[in-house]
Length: 171
Picture 1 (cartoon, helix red, strand yellow):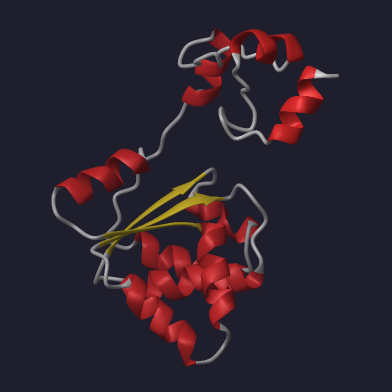
Picture 2 (cartoon, rainbow, N blue to C red; picture 1 turned 45 degrees about the horizontal axis):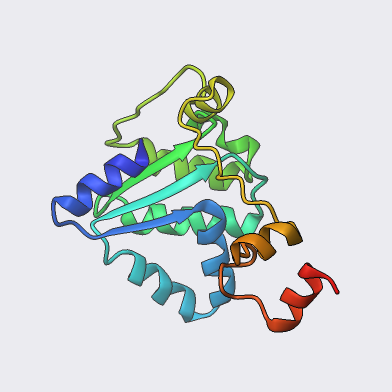
């Protein structure tokens, strides 16, 4: 859903910043506690739409929760934010400290359009039914294959050394 939303925004001429929650936390962590963090947040705010994906998949460090809060607070009533999460926003306090979760959710849900989806994962359904799965072409790595076809399929055709070819074809 977020991929289509983000692509639609780009197609409409809007600037989009896209992060997983972990990437956002890493970005702020690398900037440290000085003014560089503020500059990083300002740079993110240059986008018209900020997409933060995969909230709730992994445990959230306090620094990551603070990064999410800083972005949401900076964007509040100024930028569009789209989030995806396995949890309802009311459950964010299971992921992060309660005070940060409450302040973040308060700003997120004010003026929000909340889209709740239900059902099975499309990716899992396709994978278990064989739909949407493209089988890899069978490329044997045997010496006979190399000797008869002159092709070597790993790491890439034509990327083997003379020594590797000699080892594969044998004495």
